[in-house]
Image (cartoon, rainbow over all chains, first blue to last red):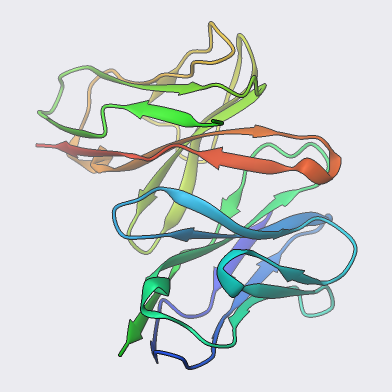
Length: 114
Length: 114
């Protein structure tokens, strides 16, 4: 079975500051990794995903994430945040073979302060 | 436009009154699933379907039913809703084709059971 831990439930930052949202996972098999964003009162939108290849993955809205297999981590970063980045962010994994579901972390609420 | 639609978007009901939340996708995806989102718990899978007439339980199936009579539709049925089913529900569909692994989410249905 897979599990995902998002290490911070809330992250407040100032506008234009850098941010890192941490995600660790546990799995006995190879997995795909995802970050989703949920803006207030909206559904989930895919930010980026790691399937294979380069461990540094670039997504939408200036976000990027780095897959670290030895640390079993997939942290999300942005060098300079904007007010519009205020949202809840979810890390998720799915096993590569026989994938049947996404396993989500608990979510991290990112609040940008002016 | 590729999309997953859910209806209703908001629903208030009373304990024991059967209800159905519809889900439809226009992408010809084989795989569909239902999740519920609760504060501090992230999203948890309720049921999934690998194709027409093929459904299986996810992590939290108690109190729910599903059916998959057509490829595009995957309704979620609550035969006798209870207050602990008050939640935000998401339907999702996906294609699983090598590096095109992507899951699409509906806009969500917010359910309140009194």
